[in-house]
Length: 123
Image 1 (tube, rainbow, N blue to C red):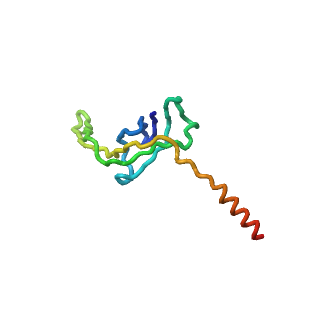
Image 2: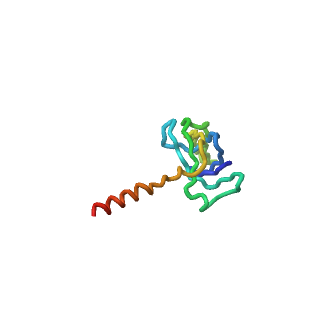
Image 3: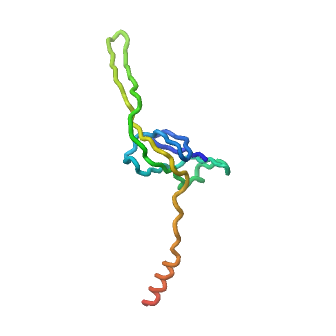
């Protein structure tokens, strides 16, 4: 099974157990993060769009870091204009732990009935 999720105007294809570099997140190392899934595929087929309402890709933050330096060199011929800059893009490494929806909500039908009978007795 794999999923595609969206983060920082980029889409990432992952499966459970993989590590992926995403745009820098404001989360501590060891924290759990989740992303909404755009597409999922498994032995039952491919799902996307409205079928994925509430489906999340959950992962654990492994590390933060910076990519290799890239050089940005701007040059205008015959004008003696040169500008050299470097840039290192920050990233967060995330290990995918689960693909799927949130835990199902527990039903509390007994508690509601008990409250309803207590209010009826009080009247």
